[in-house]
Length: 353
Ligand code: ATP
Image (cartoon, rainbow, N blue to C red; front, side, top):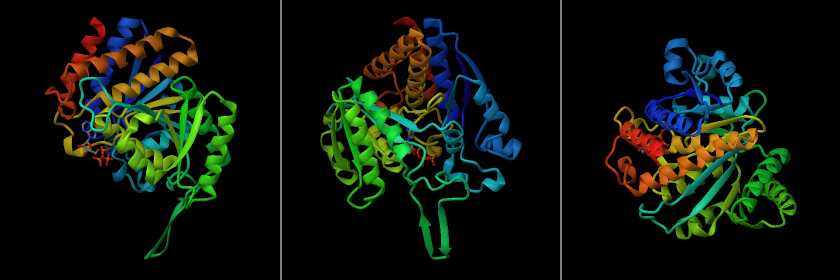
C-alpha cells in the first residue's frame, strides 16, 4: 500500500511524524509493505510555491493507494485566486469523498465525563451548508449588499441516499441502530429529503433499528446519555459540530479520528483543526491521526481483501486503548508524555504486543 502523506499546518507535522512511526511499526509487524511518499500542502506550500495545493500533489495522490492529510489552517485560506485553496476541501472534492466516518468512544482507565459510549458519526461530506464547495462554479455564499449575506445549503437525493446507505451498512456490522439527526422542523425540504432517503435505506436493512432526533435535542442527549447511540447519520455541518462534541466527550479532541471515504479512494484526516495554540510544543495528541490511519488501513483491507490490513488496524486500536489505560499519552488524556514520545511508546507497544 502506497500512501501519500501531507503533514499540513500547526500541529500537523508533529502528529504526522508520530503517526508514521506507528504505521512503520504496524507495517513491520504485519508485513504490510507500507510505502510513504511525503509532500507539502498548506502554509509551507503557499510560501514555497505560491499555492497551498500544487497540481503535482493531486497527481501524487491519484497514483497512491490512499492519503494521510494532517490538519491544515483552513481559516487562513480565504482567496483561491491567491493560491489559498483549502486542502481539506480540495481533496474531498477531487476524489468525491462523500462519507466522513468519525468514531468516538470512551476508554477503560480514562474517566468518562458522561458514562461509557461507543458510537460513530457518519457525516455527509460533499454538500450541505459548506457553501465554499457545494456549487459547480462560484461560491454558495454571496454578499447582496455590504450588510446582507446569503449562504446556500445544497441537499441532493443522491448524496442523501449514498450517505444513508453507508450508515446502515456500518450499523449492520455494529449494534444495529441508526439515529438520523436533522432539523426537519425548520429545514423541511432539505432535511425532509434527507430523512426520506434514510428511511428508504432503512428498508434495505430490516435488521437495523432506526430513530430520528432533532439536532438541537441531540446535543442534550449526547451529553446526558451518549451510550444509547450506535451510528449517527447526519448532514455535513451538523456532523462536523456533533463529532467535535463526541470526540471531546470521549476524553479529548485529540482522540478524534476520522476517515473521508468515497467509492474508490479514502483519506485519513483527524477530526480537529491545526490547533495553532499548541503547535511546535510537543503537546498535541497524535492519537487522532493514528486512529484516522487505523481506519484507512481497515478500509484498504476490506477493499483489497488482504486480511493483514484488518489485523493491523485492530492491533492499532488495541494498542491505543492499552496506551490510554497505562497513561502513555499526552497531557490532554491524563499522561505526561510529549507528542513524539507518545508516538514512540505506541510504536514499541505495537511491536511488543
Ligand atoms: P483551526 O483554525 O485549524 O481549526 P483551531 O485551534 O481553531 O484550529 P482545533 O484545532 O480544532 O481548532 O482545536 C481546538 C482546540 O482543541 C485547540 O486549540 C487545542 O487546544 C485543542 N486540540 C485540538 N487538537 C488537539 C490535539 N491533537 N491534541 C491536543 N489538543 C488538541
